[in-house]
Length: 65
Image (cartoon, rainbow, N blue to C red):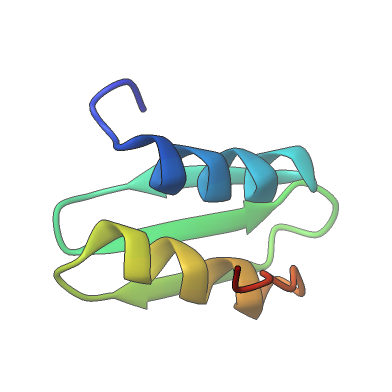
């Protein structure tokens, strides 16, 4: 995750910290729940937008500021 911009990295680290393995590809991001193996996938072109959608799918509310 070193080549990600800081906001995208922060969102994905939050997802990771909530108990998910996070996979990042060019056109999708995926979170896998450590507890039950459930997978969440978001496809798109903008990694930040995909990361935010992924966070919402796993139940993390992001606040606009």
